[in-house]
Image (cartoon, rainbow, N blue to C red; front, top):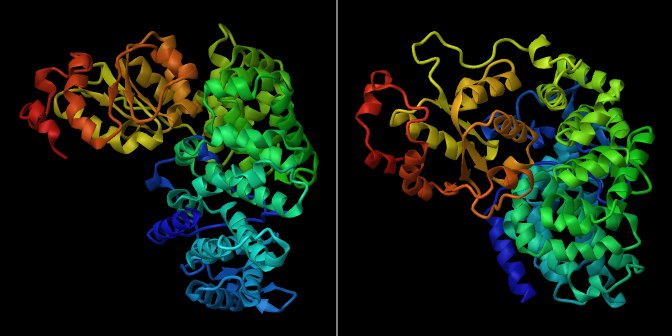
Length: 589
């Protein structure tokens, strides 16, 4: 059965595209360059593609042609020579049928060396992009298919295990930075395969005192952690593969890396009810905070004892903080001084994660009081909100200050939205006669943007005045949001896991609730059940399922009936096009 599964996985992967990054899977690893707009990622159309060694503008490095740089100093190989070697070796590996040979081991070891830690992050990134593009994921499946036919954990099959170990190390390293590779791995079934292995008798019943068993568990967990960290859409795949139950076994292993990896993966995938069981006490959260503290105390913010960078730990903590009970626990366990260190870091990713984390934590009133009593933290947020050159950092810092400020009747905390030099004008003010007419506001997470743009156009076509940030944002994001909520006659709350987890979306939703605005819940993710703060907000209200394009046509007439006259433009203000449209036209597009 396993062999048939591997063949199916291999066929699926051959249909998927690969490309991107890496880092070291065992021992010292390269600091991942995270885009923390992970917390509120921009639409794909706004994301910048990574540089490619084959593209224009990537030829020079400090005045030297990149091809001539000696990358492998031990062997005296230049970048160009390494690329040629990689092309030859991966092409050779993809044409083979026997993967349990010394020659295969030699080729895999060469590839593995190119993914090891190197302080030159740019060169590392480019090498990894090349390795992934050449098809290293296909090599993984073929090596696995070969070694799974033998009992690779027996001494007589040591070469089979060594080759499996090496390809796993390569994939672990590459997936640490490559979102594209992680996406390909998730779509082709690696999540299910690795979880199945972790659930096998040989691993789950082991105390992992055997080094080979321990390495397999660390590698599987390492790759799975990279996938869930890089690809939030993979959450449903983890849950459908029973990951919550399987991973809890490894929370009780004595090996720190195993326990930490399992817990961080769970941080991304558990729901509110499961969180109450896994985090029934403060122990797990304190354990993770202690690792973050250790990492931040080191010179390069890397915990040698636990083998984690501060950014990796903070990412997991920020996901844990989405749960309101965890917010309180983190505040009481001393999270704020650690987040202050992140804000004061010179690393952009750490600043971004720190500001985003404080934004999330500040939705709890107890934490707001703690923050108000830490002027140094507020000053750091204010400084980033007004002076950071990074838009994502400015937005997160302003968001944190906004939330901290909102519950206080009088607050000395200034509003960066109205004082920063980066702010110009705020939304949609217009001299048109319709400017004062209340609108229908769409509150959504970026992952649902495509669907909601279609809904917006259809609502406008039948005479509604619709506010959506893609049309109406300039300058100050939070002030634009606030004015949009204030001027709305009804607000469409577009429910999804991303919406619930996003501090930006929660800020909109809570401001909506605070102003007692009418809301209509829309379901944009078919398997999503709102819980936590979002579940309490929407309650038992009737919702409209727009999770598929097909549903839009059938649900939109019902939605229009529910909206009624709220946000409708006077007949004389509507365009000729919209006047000629009827409900029948909603089936188009």
